Amino acid sequence: MSTTIIPGPTYAEMRDPLLLPPALRNAANAARQADTQPVNLFNINWKNTGDQVEKLVLPQQLTGVQANIIVLSGRTYPSGSMKVGPAYATLAEEEALRGLRPGDKTVIGPSTGNFGIGTAYISLLKGYHAIVVMPDNMSQERYARIRNYEGALDLTPGTESDVILTLERTHNEYVAKPEKYVVLAQFELLPNYRFHRHVTGDAVVQAAKGIGNGRVAAFVSAPGSAGTLAAGDYVKSRWSDSKIVALEPRECSTLYNGGQGQHRIEGIGDKMVTLIHNVFNTDLLMLIPDEETVRGMEVIQSGAAVLADRLGVPPAAIEPLIGKFGPSCICNIIGAIKTAKYLGLGPDDNVVTIATDSYDRYPSVSQALYERNGGKPDADQLEMWAKSVFLGASLGEIVDLTQTGQHQRLQDMKEALWTRFGYAAADIRKMADQAFWDAEYAKIAAIDPLLAEARGRLPA
Image (cartoon, rainbow, N blue to C red; front, side, top):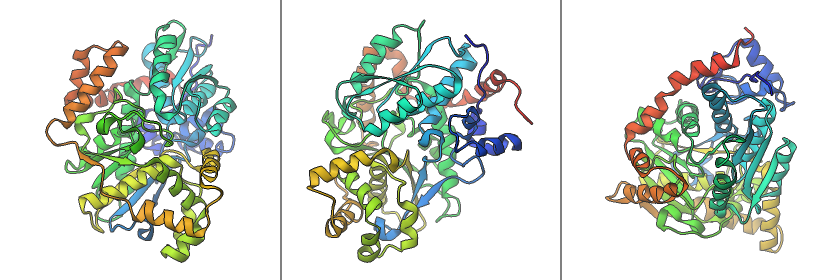
């Protein structure tokens, strides 16, 4: 057993990498091509360990709306996805607050993919053995990445929509044995919320600077674990009239109407209201068809000529998009377009959303699309898909959660699920008050000095 913690950043340093000593920032940036070097932990931020967020502003010829659609890109995070951030924060809090050390316990990461990859990656860099619990029908690229980072797999039956089985396995086999395992429970532990409210929320605000009126009219994201939606809480603390918009697959419309179907959008649509979802602060809920997300991904990936010749998208605006988006990001983009239409936003308004990862995790998803489609799409099909998926994003299947009873409906769903996993109903009911979330967020002020103390002395 080691008594030494492999050092990593505080919440403040993830939010603003310029707080790191220059020598350390330089070392972290130099290590990007050797991603298993532990110094890469200091690259966990939205700003490429500098001062500018990684973002894309989508061309209006593609979105069909006047509002500016801004996409934060998580692809440059270590391991290739921003999900590594909450995985790191959860493990780092265990070390700083509860004295966990490498060799003490095995790290468990319940996931449908990206958080599992992040768990395996962080565990490898910090010297822990990791087991990722996830459904057995996710993309093969995700399993390969977890194994590449020396993580073991504990696969549960089903697909993205069957993550509840993953949750049950996690509680029955791992949470029940705290002497052997530490569970980075992304759906229920508050470091996930803290990371996204503090780090991602600030990045969302920074991304809008210098664009339109510089404000964020709406923050849009599919929930997944709902950690990412916490960024909206930070945005609302800046502009109280901003909207937080949650997205679901039409085929698994659990929050929308209790639907429980299968779908193809990896990373979202988990058949539950997660414990860390601040449902009373979410304004709108929208459904997105899963096939549209895969078709939209293919349009961006292989339809550059079609976008230029038939939709009039400037070639210089297309090139930066290629390779950047998986299905969940296309889902978020469609939701952002729907949001701009629904709210009647104009050229001064900004809608910000998230690209959790990039296309390199989804070639097998493209291959499955080709098989369903009878081959690769030709130019006419790509044009049709571009116009229907992006320009044709509809205003149907939208719920205004601020209407009477909608927030309480989701809160009741949360209570019904999580009391099954040992949480007290009285504690869950406290989550109906914004003061609960603000108090959890405020804990960063006390946690950060402990994170810094636990990691010891850093190079100047």
